Image (cartoon, rainbow, N blue to C red; front, side, top):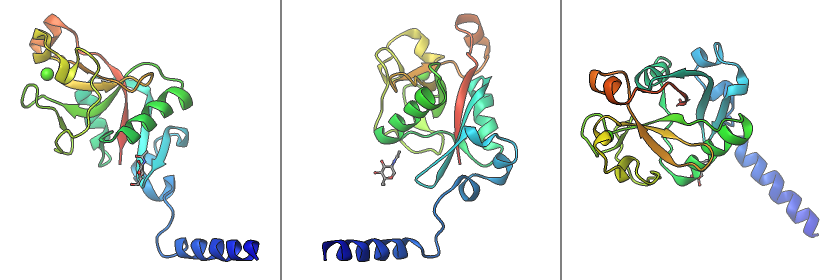
Length: 181
Ligand SMILES: *[C@@H]1O[C@H](CO)[C@@H](O)[C@H](O)[C@H]1NC(C)=O
Ligand SMILES: [Ca+2]
């Protein structure tokens, strides 16, 4: 009897999911321009968002950000601890990356006021000691763009591009990055 009830429940729930909405897959979530140019190995779909782990290229922040925008996306926006953990874990465990990757967070407009690339305000944050909001050094004025360390999920601020000041003091690093669509 219990088995019968359970299987009825299973049938009912699978029917409920079998409605008009297709389950998110790479094919129906990632933009065609990404699918046609990126090896599927580097694409992941979570909660109806497509992530491209660009671990096969390195760019300064501004160029990485532009690359994501080309297909209508942004650099990844890990606004929750859950998503941050997911991205860090995928980068580290699945792609074998322990170098930092750019995410879509910066304080270019207003020093010490970090905003997401979609203009959302920072709610949850994960800056490492002496970095980002915890950066009390003079370098904070040229370290405006944020990278995620896949090893511990911590955030670190770096120069965004080769501006006059940043190239003199602290060259802008080229890093791998994650785009989201
Ligand atoms: C996916 O969405 C669920 C429900 O909103 C949420 O609890 C979970 O944290 C999300 N997963 C990731 C990896 O962000
Ligand atoms: Ca700064």
